[in-house]
Image 1: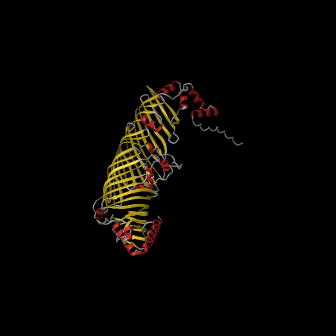
Image 2: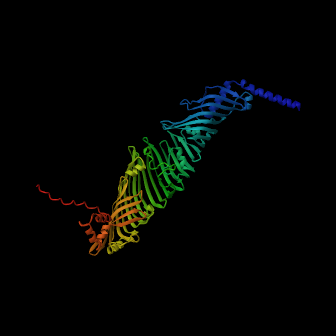
Image 3: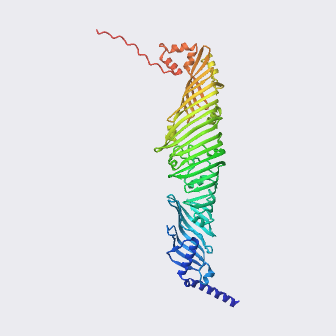
Length: 619
């Protein structure tokens, strides 16, 4: 046992001595040549090694190189701070250097799209020969600069492994883009075919948590990158995915789970998606899209159709953001509209927004030279037909918006109930709206909005008051006490015209007509305070004569007050009318006349100056 132990110790000492002495027995020229051959076989391009080369035996045989650069005769696009190449031990013991794997530490790569649309890869990979023995390649803590049309994106913390399989290559690993860690895998079936301008099958997978992207198809380089295949993307939050591209969604709600799948066709100047299926927040649409680049402009065209879409989760635009900032005062940035041109056709069988449902929608969206236009060909709303257009146009330091819309033969009761929560009217109505506003914020636009709206209702009912019954009771007892609330007033036609000037809404004229009753109204309507300040005249038609009663409507929308004109009531009273006229006469005292004027709302007459005394003739 002692002899065996001594023998083992001696063998270990001899092996350690041999491993220690071996680096000095192998020349650096042989090491440099072996590594150069391995790198040339793995990449197809001979490297330039300008730094020191040394062989380290422990903990495993490794060749370390510094300052390595690849140059295929064009632009040097790949360099590494240091390279480690593992050496197979058994061949090394007999004086042969065979490289097992190569690890690039802190390399810098570049992928560029030149003016001719050809791609330049910083690490030029070429398929190996039939009998070439290829080492494994690994990149650790690398950096990739991607230059597309003059814009550069940087991928950092590259940690990938490359493996050849015949003429194909597989790449797996991870990287960071804009602080987001992404797992990636890429398989190219035939690198040689790509070099000849032929098509090669390709598979790509990216997983960044909030966004997963996949492509299965083929690519080729013919005067630029071309490809076709199945493109798929999905994720738990589109909002988070858009944030990586510095895109802020227009609403605080929604933009959660999403998915996309389509047959993609790529050319150097266009990308088209056919058989497209998009799903967002449970809403699904199908159709096709195409993205083109011509004459320096990007154009997006396409059609999308949906069976049913629910927009309730996106909410209505709030007055404040979640952090308490005033939403209405946020500057409106229309510069992004100039980035591309847009031509989309959208259709849906039904779109739900809270309790409001639009059906059979046909919408065209057009963006040209920074001017956005939404044209609604037709939609069903509240049982009526809705048509209209909205135009958003950039102006000097602000934006201008124009709205033109019409709603024909709609259910007035449903419409008013959805807008105000009240049911003061029913009948079949028609509505026309024309508005325009300019400003650099939504608040400025609300202050500037101007335009008008016309409403007409046929064969409807005014709910909450019976005008004819009230007038008949007042006609019998002008000074009696009445409760005007309650009842219904049928009418043949109601027509109104509302005007908005500098953000203020006014009722220019409203007329309610029926065989027995006619009512006219005008005044101010406050949307912000939800109150009324109206004045008008109610007329009762009777054989041979009419009864006209001026009145006012004041108070909130929910509980308005109808106030008849006091002077008209007094004049209507047979007993009180002479008293009123007498008190207004010259014999009434100033105090009594003031009371009467205050009750009737009349302004007091200017006081009559006393008659001048006759001048005394001079003595």
